[in-house]
Length: 237
Image (cartoon, rainbow, N blue to C red; front, side, top):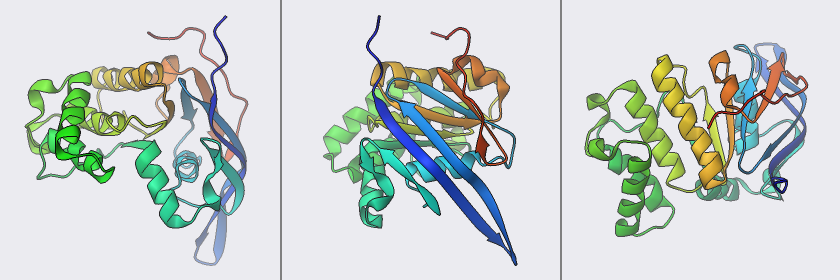
């Protein structure tokens, strides 16, 4: 029997409210959440269910009004804002549906820019960027700019940029929503590889039911509340 996977992230009682005019809308309603190293945890639910707000609270992008997030064993929101920014830079990778690429930079420059911010030398950053782009199948495209690439290739650059940092926590927000079925499967297989080979805790929010088979755990969120989680019947290698 394999040893249990270690806890990477846990949250208790997360509450988030937004004001809209004179009204207050509660988007997260006492959410508890856990994610482990080496697993893909899929958070699924319809638009407006609170998925993106949850991932923002878990990753240090948006402070919850109530509740606690323990990330890599430390209380995330007890830190000063500058230390939270540093934590994200050093330990977190992000993949978004809009790719978030710089139009003027080549694929390899997209990745090296983030690595240089981590303090790596130009040579180290270049080597790690090339390795990451090879891993996602873009070794021959690393000198192309975003306008020369397909949507699937752009998303693979975003994945390369995230995994090159060797993050302990990898957050993906609707990573396949702008992609066709074939490219969507490539992307989610790369996320599984990040969990299995890089031992990252991968937290992916989506409303795409095709991705359920790729998850180690599935958590459903509806109207700001978490429903009992599930494991798929069979994993995907």
